[in-house]
Image 1 (tube, rainbow, N blue to C red):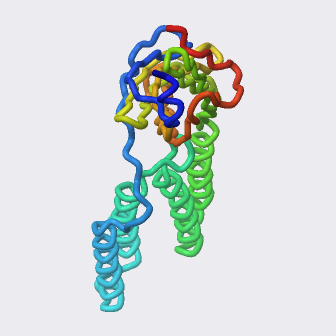
Image 2 (cartoon, rainbow, N blue to C red):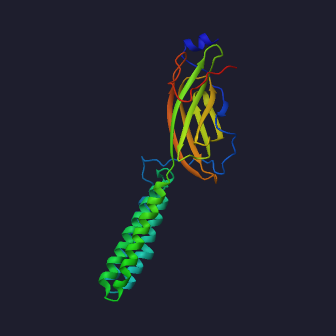
Amino acid sequence: MLGAIVGAAVLGAVGAIEGSSGPTANTPSRLAVVAQQSADAVPPGLLAELEHLDKLLDRLKADWKSGKLDQSELLNRVLFEIREEKRALVKRYFNAPAYGSVTYSEVLEKLDCVDTQLALAWGFAVWSSQSTKYVPDRIERAKKCKQALETRLRKVVTISEDDTWAHNPALGKSRLCINVRTSPAQVSVSAVITGPGDYRADIVSRLHADGSAQIRGIITLAGDYTKTIAVYDASGEKTATVTKTFTVDAPPKDGPATNPPCAKPTD
C-alpha cells in the first residue's frame, strides 16, 4: 500500500494528534487566535474617520480665527476633543501586534503621550511667568510615557521554533514535530496545525520549565502545513503568537535534524 503512496509522492491525511512533550496541559484561559490584520486594503471606516478629523480641525481653525476661542479653550479643544478622537482612531485601526503582545496602537499612543507632555511643557514655559513652575512636571510626565513603553517592550515574549518530520514507510504514516522555545520562559502553549486533505490538529500543552516543548502530530500527506502557535504566562494571558507555513517532503525524505529529534511513528 505504502509503495503506491510513495510512488505518487502523496501521504494521505489523518487528524491524529499526539500533543506535546511538555508537561500535562491545563487549558489556557484565552485560546482564541487573534485575527490577522490585512495589509492589502485600507478599511473604509479609517478613511471616514480621517475625514471626520479634518472637519474637527477645520472647525477649530474657524473658531479660533473668528475669536470664539481664547487660549485656554483652544487648548481644551485640542486635548479633549481632537486628541481623543485621534487616539480612538489609532486604537481601532492599528491594533495589530508590532512586537509580541505590544500593538502598533500602544507604541503610537505612548509616543504621542511624550509629544503631548512636551508640547504642554513648552506652552507653560511661554504662557506666563506664573506657569513656568509646571514645566518640570510636564517633562517628567513625558519621561514616564517613554518609560511605560520601554517597560512593555522589555517584557516582550519571543517564540522561536523549528519544524521537522519523520516517515515510517512500512506504516504509511509520518510524525510531524514542531520544537517551540520561548524567551522569557512561558507556561503553556496552544497550536493549530492545518494541512492537505483537510488535516487539522488542535493542541494545548504546558511547557517545560525552560519554556520549551515539542508539539507532535501524525500525518499521512506530504505538502504545505500552516501552524499558528500562541504562548501564555502563568495567569493564562496570551503573550505572543506566530503563524508560519512549511512544506513536508514526501517519503522517504525526512525533515531536517532538530534538537530534540523527531521520532518516526511506531504504530
